[in-house]
Image (tube, rainbow, N blue to C red; front, top):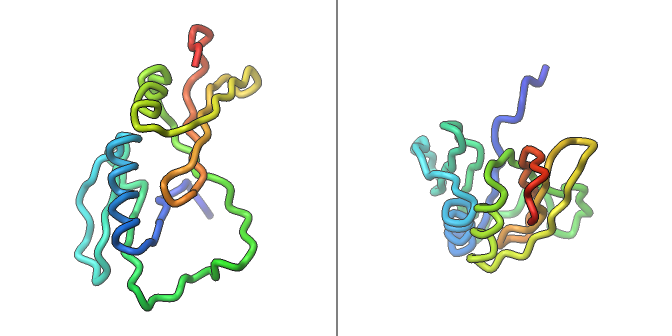
Amino acid sequence: MIHGLNHINLRAPKALLDVLRDFYRDVLGLEIGPRPAFNTPGYWLYAGGQPVLHLAEQAPDEALRAPAAAPGVFDHTAFTASDPEATADRLRQHGVAFEVSRSELTRQHQFFFSDPAGNGIELNFPFDPNFKG
């Protein structure tokens, strides 16, 4: 039985991998932390003391596990976040375009945008009637 989400893994060539590392660290505030000494270079990024995002280097001759031409259904990864005002400012400072959704039904604010590789990201904040976006 599944008890929760363990981590997300992104695999990319070295140059893009470093861009993703910087984005998730500098823009979204994840922290680079310990990672086992795997044969493949990469990074583990942490939130709340947990390694939630694994980044692994894709070798130049390595085939993707899912062919790029295959139709996918993955839409986005969602993170629980805090301080929507500061987060909105940080995204804007880094030139990240995002959409804001306010849901009375789920009692949250949501930001939707893409990372530098085009992966969908959602940030969920507790609903704050004073948040203007």
